[in-house]
Amino acid sequence: MALDVFGARAAHPVLGTADRLTPARAQALLFSRDDLIQAGHTERGLRAPVAENRLIRVRRGRYVHADDWAVLWNDERHLLDVIAAHRNSSSPGLVFWGPSAAVLHGLPLYRWRPLHVHAVVSGARHTRARARLMLHDVTVGPADVTDVDGIRCTVIDRTVLDLLCGASAEVGLSAADAALRAEAVQRHGQNPERAQAWRARMNDRSSRTHVRGIRAARELIDFADGRAQLPGESVSRLQLLRLGYRRVPLQTPVHGPDGEEFWLDFAFPRSRAFGEFDGQGKYRDPRLRGGRHIEDVVLAEKHREDIVRGVTGWRTVRWSTPHIRTADALGARLHAFGIRPPT
Image 1 (cartoon, one colour):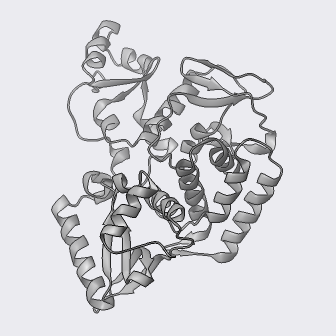
Image 2 (spheres, helix red, strand yellow):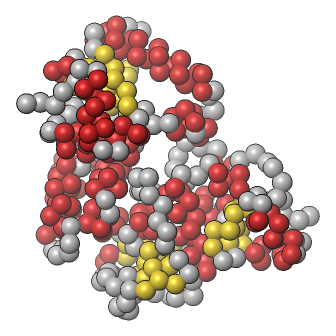
């Protein structure tokens, strides 16, 4: 029987979870030209589904079903690109670096899908691009190389520092918050000792690094907080900092009358208001909805907000991705609800 990749079908089972796409799951989504030929398809028979966007060509000879591709976030699509590049590579010294290492570690790339896969070749010094593979002239020692599901990349600390130095502050802080969250946060609380150990380790690494952007990277290391649960919350924190808020309380608990426990993203005590980042994925992505209908998600949020207001007397102000594109945009949103930066 031919491999069925052309007809409409339900999403692949590896995507039936709210978790981020892992390298192991991503490898199950990706199939090769040889897989298709061995399953009975012909070279000519592959052209129509690619032209009609029913089959997505990730890299030369590597494909994914369009239904699966459609539900992936940008960084998950880049993960597929990295795995395809790994399968196509004949270089034994290839080490994925920067954003391409980040997606292997499960770190977010806030609103960024790199045009190239980024890597270094052990023992080689050059910067060049070929077939959408960018090889960088940077030094990566053996201690900075690890293996993720059989794919070599820079260790997570080196990867975070490279993003903090070389990517936008939004991307860098989102990755730093995620790395710190994995190391120091349980449920909604951050362990101070583990967080301090992470910062000490990252600051020690940064003190031995002399590249452009290292000063800003050190500031973001100190500002990182693993209690930011989504990249949108990390970027909200960054824009609040730019507006003059130093340390806005994060993940404030509220207990309802029937034993409910809610955690609010941000708190503005002077204004007696909570703040919530409301990404569209919460409502539109079936994986994030956990199988619930959009209406059920909206009603649950309204019920939660009613209880929070009834118990605390505080308002809840919501914002979404368009409001955090700039500090001014978020400031205008908060100002409209009577929330102003500290003087």
